[in-house]
Length: 158
Image (cartoon, rainbow, N blue to C red):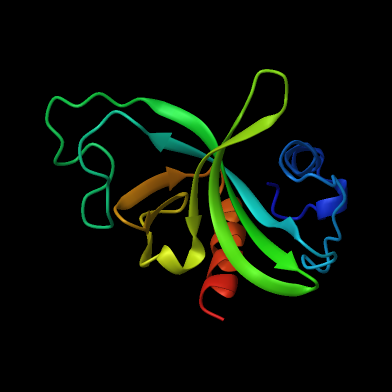
């Protein structure tokens, strides 16, 4: 997600909405625009290390403390959504999704935002979100990380 891009002008955001949210329409100002729908608040393209070993933390960045573990990086998308019914927020969710070869998206994991226990900033582009275990992701730019985490914190601890 480009940090200065408006939701209505972001083609990748529109692909996500069209792929994953049934009505395909979205009001970027009010995520609770219609009854019984899930709406995208924000998203971020990330890379994740899937090679095993322990997730990095502030004290132990990627590769430090790992022995004989290979680093496999996968591109994923983190999506923060609101599920609403009759204009009332029912739940806020964090999805991990992947982009398919045909430009559609599929969700691999879903967590309720209340399950987020801790958010750590590792460096300019890397962060760790602890849910049941720590998950480490990196963005392409610091701006993308900052915008995503700002929105995530705003809805998680408001």
